[in-house]
Image (tube, rainbow, N blue to C red; front, side, top):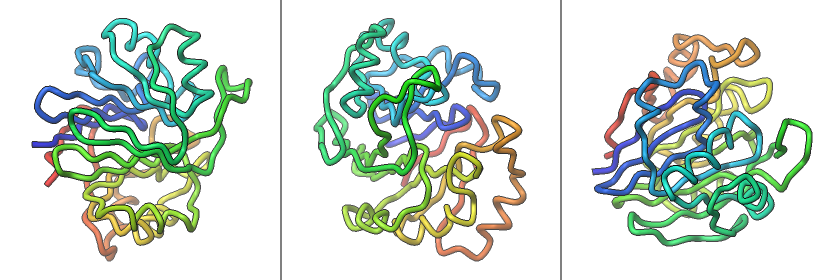
Length: 226
């Protein structure tokens, strides 16, 4: 069984048997992070880009749990300087793990540490785990090459930003789902701060006639991926 847990903002945990994959671990300082987040001991961390609300606790957790971090090359180098153990890779790279594989794709955004120093480029992750396919878009605008990601595999769950302002908003996320051909949308990157406020009912209304399933997850909620 492959299980998805939402930790608020853009942070998720994927579980399959003994493998625990933590994505964009913004936990300390995240007002929406659930209490369960402090107990997570990942076997792998994925970081989409350097912004503090995504790279957040990656270095500290890597040190504490002895797990590797996969990110784009320069972002990984910076996290290594901060104490993380990294896997060196970049967009287009594909990596095999006991649970399956992870491939890095582009994201249209920026990447910096301390929200000032530009470091590397952002990415998204296409993840195969336990025979299921999940896509974590990171922070991104809508872009046409999402259709190429959709050609790579039949995506069971797509985790897409919907809050607007710094990423695509809900309307563009619906368009992204069509390009990706994904079966289920899990919205993320909304509601954490005033600048990305979005009501849950707005999300449901915006997806009412869409050709995919919608799962609006509360922080701490888990979803079995089928």
